[in-house]
Image (cartoon, rainbow, N blue to C red):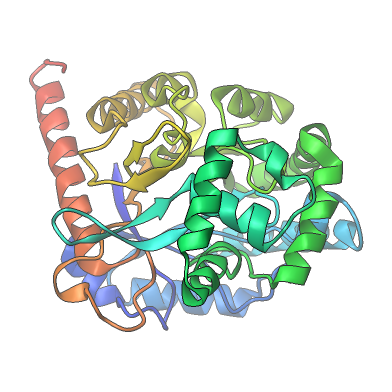
Length: 398
């Protein structure tokens, strides 16, 4: 597997030399300065690629070329936006970058309610707390009929949480949820998010899925033509927020998506933390079933709670079978080698990491993207990969 690292460009407090010191060889990045929906210019792509290669690294995965909401709703100038997207794919391929991670999440990208959840060892993790989210949705945002989205137990807990919050805590909760997290696709104010939510709720799961498949039918032929592999990221978390449709949350969703555009250019990002936030997603089984269409992997672990809450645990100490998942992915790589495919090694990155050590208290650190926490995660995952590979070379299996 190819060890990669998420980098937010020249303004990232973690520079390329730091990443190289951590042992990663591939960079996962995007042109965040390009407005969503605009064509990625060749000059900008080449400049970013050279910046990475000058440090002896490779631009392994683009995460992501963001999708404009008009494409997801098929409203406004969506057809021109799709044409722009096609041209961006042609441009990245011409520059020699071939893997794109993207998502089709409505309104909010990946979402957490607490960006500094304190663990017993005093490190800080990202957390999604269902009662806090419900408190915001029902009592602060006051979305119509929002109370119907939650159980009586969650609603009662949400009201208790709301009553205990200070004004500052309410502002912080709103910021965490709607102001946009690192690598996300924009932010909202309260009025803007109400309008966006209403638009997507009217579409429902059926309409949202139809729009995703329509997008794929237009994009995938171009991707196949230029050699680009599209790898969709699952919903994070993989269940409805704000009553919004979710169409990339389960194995059935992945199955339908791959069947909608049966091309090697139409693939998956297997995000262990996203899919794994649902106890009914069997990550090892998914890796084995969809292995030939998995082009990118986010290795992240979580601890689940009964009401849908979760926090991001150590990479090898959560509810996801990380060792079993990596073993299944190595098995897929072995299959590809025996079949003589031209696919590169599966790119993986240690997704998120605890804020710990000297990174605690540093200004400008992107939530989930500290240096020390991800380096720790990468080292742990590297150890698993090394051990499993060594066993395979000796004809042994776990």
